[in-house]
Amino acid sequence: PENPTFSNTIEALDHAGSRIAEVSLVFSALKSAHGTEGIMAISDEMSRLLSHHRDTINFNPALFERIKVVYYNKDSLDLSTEQMMLLTKRYTHFTRNGINTSVATQDQLRIINARLGELTNQFNKNLMAETNGYQLIVSNKDELIGLSDAALQAAALKATDLGLADVWVFTPHKPSILPVLQQAQNRKLRQTLYEAYYKRGNNNNEFDNKMVVTELTRLRMKKANLLGYPHYAAYVLEERMATSADEVNTFLMDLWDKALPVAKKERETMQLLMSEEGNGLNLEAWDWLYYAEKVRQKKYEVDENELRPYFQLPNVVQGAFDVANKLYGLTFKEAENSFPKPHSEAQAYIVSAADGSHQGVLYTDWYPRTTKNPGAWCGVYRKQSKRGGAHVPPVVTVVGNLSKPNGDLPALLSFDEVNTIFHEFGHALHQLLSNTLYYDLSGTSVPRDFVELPSQIMENWASHPQVIQDYALHYQTGERIPTELVNKLLESRRFNQGYETVEYLAASLLDMQYHIQTSDFDGDVDLFEDTYFKHIGLIDEINTRYKSTFFKHIFGGNYMAGYYSYIWAGVLDADAFDAFLETDLFDPTTATSFRKHILERGGSDDAMTMYSRFRGRKPTIHALLKQRGLM
Image 1: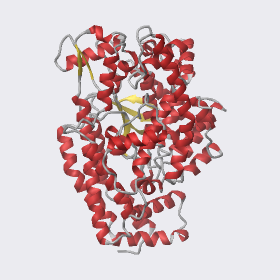
Image 2: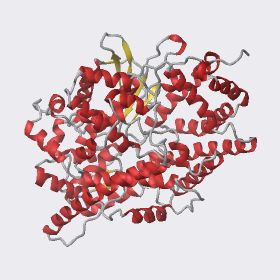
Image 3: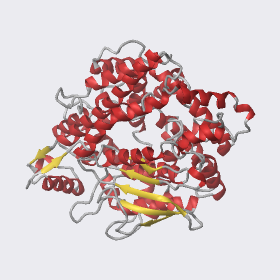
């Protein structure tokens, strides 16, 4: 009842709802990693209730009046930078959610918000069902020529899990499909599995996502219009480092114009190799990775099967832990068996700071299962904050779908999977090292196009020779990976960058194209994609990394009008890592600066301001182009 102050209104609101926030975080993390039928049923039931709950707060005029009083008097309150950021974020949160609109408009927004939650749930359920529901069964081993022993054993183990004998089973999960696309001589096998992966959510069955995509696109546009924005991208980008759709599209197309010619040269190289084989065939999308691997082996003498024995999962994880120890003094001790775990396959680590004090808890959960969403991610069971004046340490989880042990073989990873571990661990460090006062500003509560900096910079250590030779130990002999093999790996990393950049940029541009719509989307998802990709000149041999119907980032997650963030952050991470290369890989001064100005600050200050404090200047694109061999 007292007059509004920063303490009794803004801080009080940050502290409010702590119980439901705690429960929701735990539930959400479980739903993604172990979405049983019971959990998914609860999710369906709670989606509308939670949406209504949020809207009831966001459309509370009496509450907003209190916030306005504090906000309009902010210059006289002597607030810290973090307090000012919390106040501004809270005020804009209400205005961006429609508090200043009419009651009739708010009623429309309530209906839209509830439906958006339902549709996002439906998209993810359909994608999980489609991914888990497909198995390609092969009974003739002659059809599998070229596949490594590890890939064959994984397929045989999958068959055993399904109660099948003397056959090999392949699925659209990445650890199953990638070895086939890279190694299998059987072109029909590659095509069949590739098309199964690529048509997920687009098979005109009960799990088809085309209408879900259509309705999500229409409702997002309508929501943006009701809030006074020309399109949904304008609404989203208002709070990003990139502040407009034009800025994002210009950035992406500049890179596109540099990457597409490189991809075309790569296509010529692989088509020439196909022609030399005398089969008279033209390169197709399901051929690209197979012939890229052949070129890689021929040009760089690097064979994926030669590398895997050195990348045993526990050693790679320990390698990431060792980097964090050298940079930030953190130690990771596996918890006792009695420690509560979200799933029997998960591992738990007690994380301690350099002085031995408790820093937080880290869970890891690496292997595919039918109740787990595809892909890899970092989440939290509890966010860091200083609610009530006491430091609340974070509980973080890193989840993946990586190659699992096969019989007598341990989990041996591709180098892409190694990068995945370091990437998601970078997100975990952002959460674990967070040191903010306020819950709403902690950890990864930063602009979407800034959040990938802490994760992507860790990939630079994953591929550095000094680090690789610490964790890459042969699973049988314990010998360190030979220097010659490391050098070949690093030389080959620049190969196929045209392809990798183009397929990523195609998805980023597609995301933006959906969200700059200013009139009702007509609903023909396939035509929409085909027309746009023809317009920008995407070559037939490369498909977008994600087609709409399995583009989980933007239709099943929170990256709508934001998938470009990975390469935007790529500019930041390449530029930031150069700061270490200019001094030392584990330079304590540089590491302390990165921790102090980036990792600890969460979203407590402007993102570009934080980066500039660390680097002493704004980022430049030079390091990224050099890193990818695009200059």
